[in-house]
Image (cartoon, rainbow, N blue to C red; front, side, top):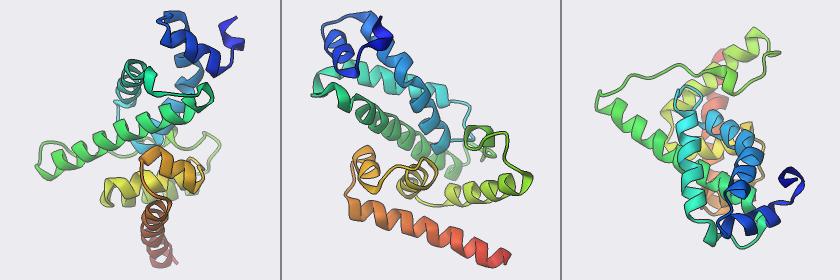
Length: 183
């Protein structure tokens, strides 16, 4: 029954303390949360930790969601901020020599039907993403790989649309430079 209820009804029940409603919201939005976290941090074995942390934060702040239909975007923003914090922490740990870089796990980003050339190209793009500022990386992943609109990326990252456009353009320039170097 709860699977057929719209997010608004589930949210209302979850706010009232109904654990079944929280479970239904989690089951409904878990695939999106895992996909977003995996695309932002494809090399990370802790994508499940990111998602779990995001759900804990979300369910502890349910009172701040006004409309049930906004739940998915609101949760996505929490996943993005949680992943962004993790990206920043990983970069700092690598800078301090406390952690090694990991190769991207392309299964988190591309389907099994991708040919070896596509996989190699994506590996190169993720190598570039490892070097750019974390906020640029997240904006690019959400816009280009996840396919969100500029406004959706702005909402998810808490940035203005012009900032998102600038961040995406910077990464696109780095990717374009790679293409010209290969060509």
